[in-house]
Image (cartoon, rainbow over all chains, first blue to last red; front, side, top):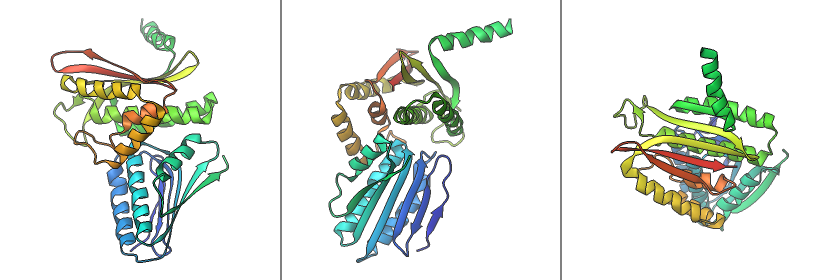
Length: 128
Length: 184
């Protein structure tokens, strides 16, 4: 599958999906006009790729400054997908990067991660 | 005289503590533009970062609610049209040392009860309840009437420092005016 690299805009995040290294990241702000149009295909590709893997390491990095409620739905789905992949035998590490002064982003990371059992979750601070 | 007219109008707005006042057709590009100005203004206010982020988050959710759901629309029968324009009012200001974000738009009378019920429920919920509802809704299939994730109001309630305030005004048989205020 072709790697996906989309540059950030003022309202949408940078997407860096490396399917050969199984290293994925979403970085920046996310409140695009049409969340489905932005994330739809990207997520689909990721899900197809993960379901085709029997084993291996997967690293998913989130480094978000702000995301709207429509994006939150996508992220929740993504966390569920990653947990499913981990339950299926993949070694999944989810890293949530946040500004150490941003209590909200810290809390949101913890909330999304509450239901992760098979996948490993790491909170990582960025200096402000 | 013209200058006085506009100045008096500005004074009415200022007296209410309003910093940003937008009344007009709200589109995504409008959101982008005002959003940028808002970010700059908040930065200059030197409000603490959490406050700034909460104001911005509420602003985005309220604007997107108007963009998606305002019943005052041109062309009048537009539905999911890329070229529709939806009308609303958005105010951001300060009051008693707090920031507020207010939005107002026309809605259909038939939606008043549903909205009122939903918002009334949110007013009664604790932060833990709001969080649980938020997660539950994020995971459930999107409602037919929803164009987003269905959690905009919950997000607004969570980001506010006080219980959200809302109200409805009857306009005519088919329409009411809906207003929502959040404090940060």
